[in-house]
Image 1 (cartoon, rainbow, N blue to C red):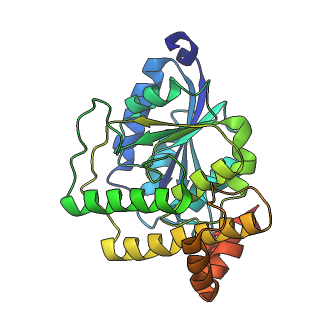
Image 2: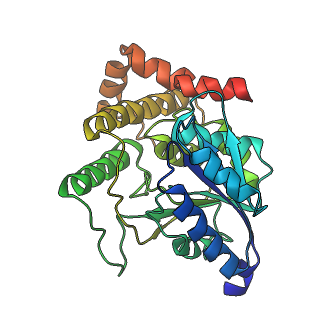
Length: 291
């Protein structure tokens, strides 16, 4: 397998917003690792309206290294929207992945996922599964929220993925168009929507433990994150419950579930949930206009 992944083609997408302090280190580390592996690679940075020197720094590298690219949008897209925009508008290589600019997952972790990509359509990194790797060190409240979200995800969808929100995943090119076009949630639960949509499309997924370093400089309020993710995940559940009711592909629904009927009834009277489920967020509509 090592020989197979030595000369593979991979597109690495990195969303950025006001990252002048971290983007240079990110570029240097990715270039060093990918060149060392001998990959046919490209680094696609998607700027989401930065007002600092982020774009200038990346453009400086584009003049020196053809494999560094930058996309910009006149509309704020968010992390998920930036990734979708790149996948649907760039001629990506055989495999595609996206990474956080702080490289919480070092580029070397890609090798773990690529070991399985010939057998699966999507390989998902996991901070929850360890299989001999050292435990992830992060604040107690982050561990609590992560484990709680993992339990909620598997309770709602019955999909055997323990860390749907992990920011490191690898996709085969041929499945990305249909998959990313059907994702509605562009906010915090973007990764969850990807997993549920992939399952509904019958794609083969494998979850692999990875090493992960908790970022110290989060720009997001935990309260805002919890509130938004809660709304997003029930919106995804509502959308796919509707699909199941109309005999369309969905998650592994327990037919006739009493609790499912109760939850569906409650969510049906919530306009915010219904609007997100049926039309997506404002950023989803923005991407549709851009395409």
